[in-house]
Every structure is written in structure tokens, then in C-alpha cells.
Image (cartoon, rainbow, N blue to C red; front, side):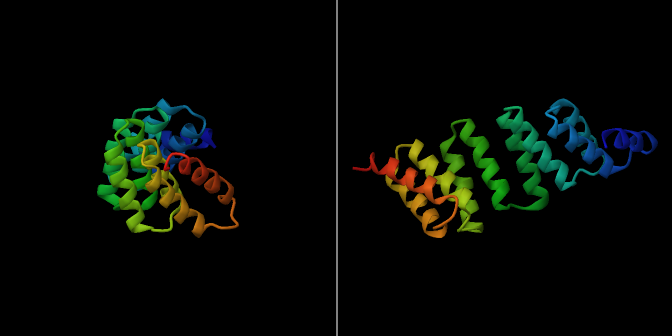
Length: 169
């Protein structure tokens, strides 16, 4: 497929889907510099192209360029608005900068949009746990457990609750 997309781009460099698909293929192969080149080309063609904005932010995370990923997610939100997945990704980038405050802000915003989002509840619990707030961590894990009894998450959540209970006494 890469060969075909390159050929299509040679024939018509303004083919946004081909540029995006090529960037995505390179990102999946961990050829991040090549992927970035094609995502940036997409944004030259259409600066509001949401899939390229999102993938570029994820690419920056894969490169461990947390501040750049934050900037790219902010760009995405300006165009597409917030959604729980993007807010969680933003929080993840802030966590990697040890910026607990901003991580909390974005996780809480995410929960406001999707109160039953298991990923957000667990990540927020992990943030509270890392900050030495075991009771708040336990609350989030317990909410997640109550919403996911009998699921693949149950064992993990019970273990997390058990761990934080050791520190809340």
C-alpha cells in the first residue's frame, strides 16, 4: 500500500487521504520522522484536518516529546472540541512531565464528559495514588469496579483497591 500511496502523491501531491494514509502507515512501522513529514503535509493542505492533528499529537507522545504533544492536542481541541480520549491523552502527557495538577484537571474534565469512562477512572486513581492520596484513589477504583463487575477489569481493580487500602490506614 505504501508504494501505491507514494505513486498517487507523485501524481497529485494534493491528495490528502494518500498523504494521511502514508503518514499513518509509517507511524505504524515506527518510522516516526517519515510519518511526521506526511502529517505536516496534510496540515499544509488543510490545517483543520482532525485525523492528522490527532495522529501528530500521538506521534509526539511516541517520541517522548511531551510538551509538543500537549501543544498538538491543544491544536486538535481547538478544531474538534474536547472528548474524553483526547483529554486522557493530554493528562497522560502531563503525567510524563510530573505535572500532577494539569493531569488532574484534564482527567476531571474527561470524567465530566463521560462519568463512567473506565480508563479515566483508573488513570485518575493512579494519579491520586502516586500523589499519596490513597482514599481518593480508592474512591475512583471503587467507582470503576462498581461499573465493571464481571469484566476483564475486575481483578485489576480489586488489586489496586487492595494496594491503596494498605496506605489509607
